[in-house]
Amino acid sequence: MLLTRQAARRVMEGAIAAGAIAGAVFFGAAPSALADPPPPPAPGCSAADFEQVKGGVSTATSAYFFTHPDVNAFFSTLKGQPRDQVKQEIKDYLDANPQTKSDLEGLRQPLNDMKVRCQ
Image (cartoon, helix red, strand yellow):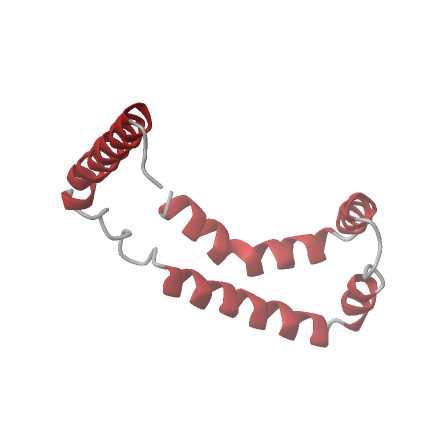
């Protein structure tokens, strides 16, 4: 089957247009590919540092719960409840137990410090 002159011209125009688009995409992306990589995170702010701090906070919180059975029991009852209800119950519990609130804030302080330092 032979293409008509008009059909052949359309095919050729389509191929040229596709080549032009591909060239624009390739060469348009080239400068960004050749750009300098993003700077490394600040010292102590890498993903590994974050996981280490998070792990330390989790370990300390676990130890606190095991040594404070009443606090452990309260937090254990929250599983499966709606998020907004859990948030309010925790707020009420910590408001009624300021020492526990202070203790837990102290345990989480390394994460807060890292958040401020690594912004």
